[in-house]
Structures are given as structure tokens and as C-alpha cells.
Amino acid sequence: MKKVKVIVERGTDGKFSANMDCYDFDFGLSGFGNSAKEALLDFYECYEEAKKMNALEGKETPVLEFDFEYDVSSFLNYYSGILSKSGLEKVTGISQKQLWHYSSGTKRPKPKTREKIQTGLRQFANDLSQVAFID
Image (cartoon, rainbow, N blue to C red):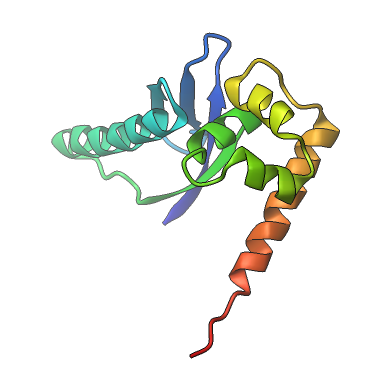
């Protein structure tokens, strides 16, 4: 299984894309949509279509593991049904108002702010990974 990077981002037109780095392959994969979720679903559909096309041509499609990297807007859009702006404010220290701007794509966070968001989310994920319940 080969691991490949997939960039998920919001374009200047407000649409979302998911594009695979394809330097090691003779094909590329892309997905597009009105949301990050739509773009990822389209991306996976593209992968399935590539497998079918390669099979028809007698080619083998490698089994790929995808490593997704998001711009802040796409991440907030994709996880909006799970992570509330209020919760994200507590985890990251970034105000809900700013998070709304980033989520909508009207503003882009500066590198220092992007790092603050990423650090807060990673700490939260680490905290969650250590949860254990007792009887």
C-alpha cells in the first residue's frame, strides 16, 4: 500500500477541491464540490473510476492510503457538523467570530494563527486518545 498526500482546499470561487500529489503514478485523482465533504466524495469516486479504467486497459491500480492535508477553511467546513465554533474557541483560543471568517473563506489565518489552531486541535486529539472509561 502506498501513502499519498491529498490537498483539500477552498478555491477563490468558494468551491472545494481535493487533489492528489501524483508524481509516482501515471494517473492523478481530483475531486470537486460545493463543500469539502462533496469534494472528498468526488475524489473517492474518481479513485474508483481510475481502478475501473485501468482494469479495462489491463493495468493494475496500486492500493493507496490517503493522507489528507486541509487549508483551514476546508477543515472547518468538513468538520462543522462535529466541531462547533464554541468548542473550537475553547480548544484553540481563537474567537468564534474569527473561526466563522476562516470557515466561510472571507479571511485566511496568518501562519501564527494557523499554527495555534493546529496545536490546539492536536492537543485535543491527544487528550481524547487517552480517554478510558471505568465500569
